[in-house]
Image 1 (cartoon, rainbow, N blue to C red):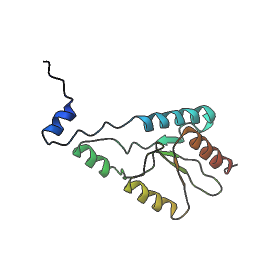
Image 2 (cartoon, rainbow, N blue to C red):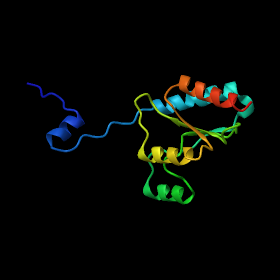
Image 3 (cartoon, helix red, strand yellow):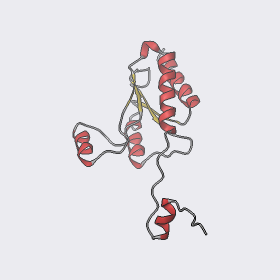
Image 4 (cartoon, helix red, strand yellow):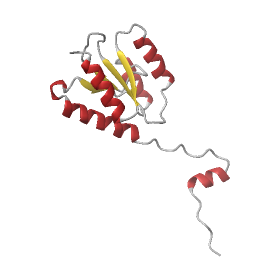
Length: 142
């Protein structure tokens, strides 16, 4: 009789250990990449004004401490469009998958930013969301 092969998670469960955490999906990354590409094609005269804030990702403690000392703030939106309108100084965009949830830091930062109505903060879960929000925002600047 041949023994069946067990997966690592099955072996860990049998040994009473916690299963490994599932690797994060690249879905949010791909969504953001498509949105930025669309923006740069549609608004070449604004290229460079829409930029990413590389706040996420896993880092070791030393790198995290250096970034914090340099001014990195937890929860800052994924994308910032530095273009003022009649009502707002900039558009701040948090990218999420359809099932994605804002972290506690992201909700705190949104409340701080939106408190004085100086900036527009939106959560986009699709390219269509992104296109709608950007067009609406830029139409207000004309």
